[in-house]
Amino acid sequence: MKHLIDPLDLSVSEIDTMLNLADDIAAHPQKYAHVCDGKKLATLFYEPSTRTRLSFETAMLNMGGNVMGFHSGDTSSATKGESVADTIRVVSCFADICAMRHPKEGAPRRAAHFSKIPVINAGDGGHQHPTQTLTDLMTIRSKRGRLDNLTIGLCGDLKFGRTVHSLIKSLARYTGIRFVLISPEELRVPSYMIDEVLKPNNIPFEEVTDLEAVLPNLDILYMTRVQKERFFNEADYVRLKDSYILTEAKLKTAKPDMYVLHPLPRVNEISLDVDDDPRAAYFDQVQNGVYVRQALILTLLGVKLPC
Figure 1 (cartoon, one colour):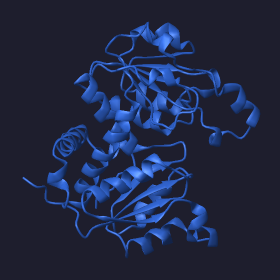
Figure 2: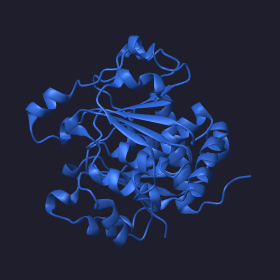
Figure 3: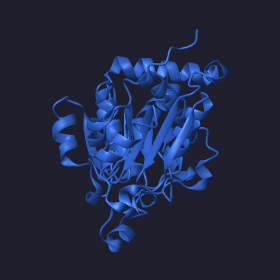
Figure 4: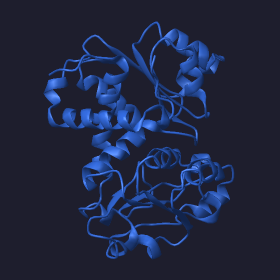
């Protein structure tokens, strides 16, 4: 049985096929309106989420399926002490596929070990977020027409940002990718990402603190939120939360075909005046997220695709 726990669970070829399917769903939504009739998706969200959970649910509903689940660990049997292993054993009796978000790194992988249905990692702690990565890849490909030979700037919380970690791992497999890692010293990308992903694959990268200095060189700027929920010290969060604020004025030095992505929610790191800039692609990401999750659900369920 196929699960999606880590972005590397999918080969580059499988990702390309998935994105092609997502493109077709976007172009012909009615063709897929009933391909999941009678199927059920369980959304097991132990951690609050708006976009990801609703995106999964919308994806299944768009294909005629049904959804069930919980949106907080406080409303599940986890409050009674039930383990992830037992929860997924039970849910396997009810649903055909599940999406799990959990604050603990590795929880979806443990669930997959005991599951009788496909498990999709919808984000585990500060570790990975593979479906956000599929969303990001679809958006980059649609805007730039390719996923290779690009300079990607990643800005903000690179230490705890699971979307950043998953995106680096995935893009590192394409040719001609160069990363510019923009963060405060305290929020640099974890050393294991450098030692296990970038250096072994000879991926060019630089770590900087000045966004404006590197902005003219970028093809994609991926902004992230400094995540209050990942900090143990309130004072550190307050000190770092507004390290980077992208404004329309700053974008004047960027390339006319550079695009700004953000996994959302944003707090203060992208000024509202950027929203009307044609290079702002973060709300397109939200829509693309539904299409790629539809494609993923169809693929993992092995649904026969319409002609």
